[in-house]
Length: 151
Picture 1 (tube, rainbow, N blue to C red):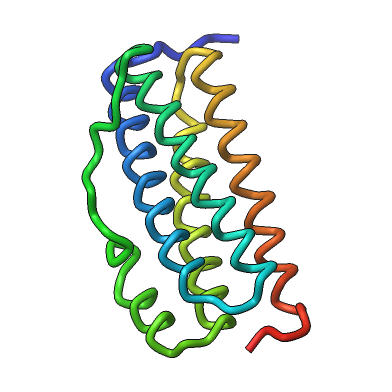
Picture 2: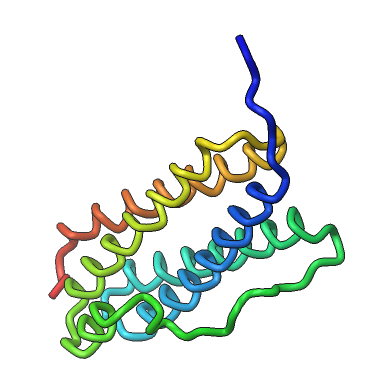
């Protein structure tokens, strides 16, 4: 069995992109949580925002070492795109929930892609942990589609 060579620059660039995605997701989830009315959805979105912030911070440390600070942009939730802005404007928890799920699919794809590149074991474990957490949140968000009081 041959081992693929690890390209440090590819790993660093991948981590930088994922960290930026996590920062954007954190802002987007926080924005969504401020708009929804269903308490269970609001709590889940706040928790997801916090986990995204923590993942971005961990990725920054993997990139820059233990004294790292966030190096990403300070874009607001509109980086999620016009669909999120429209969902928030419709004042509908269901519309926000659906947009969160759509956004989750995008980051899921980026994590799946990142996990295909050769990288050190410790970094791979961190990405797998983040990916697993993201999948759990997506399942919880999907389950809330059936929640009473969702409008």
